[in-house]
Image (cartoon, rainbow, N blue to C red; front, side, top):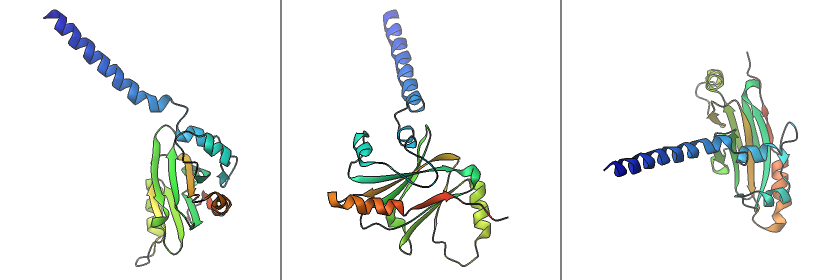
Length: 182
């Protein structure tokens, strides 16, 4: 009977250690999407990730062109605006050690463009106060508790000769912080 109790206690302790390791792993890794891609950002605006680097990344489809913008909501709401691609286009907002905030695809675009605003809850309230009643809102507004992170833009390369076109779509992306009036 005492042996059974020791086995049970050992199993419970092993289970707790296992769960603790699973919860600690995302916070201790340096090989997550944020850490890997944030090293690619070279300055303000969009930075294109070279094709060779994309092929070297684990768990990333080599048939996408990737661009990255860094955001800091302490400077104001962050806007990503782009025209549409002939193929699939997506914007993924990621934060350090916490993974993905949200993602938006070109299916959510209005008026031939994808316009996404990432803001803190307070900034979103202020933006909402500036809206004129009865006017349609054509931008997608996303709330984020995280103040810093990166926006990862992906354009599908549907054929090898399509990569230059996909990279041109990424070069045309406008991304950056905006000051709120008042």
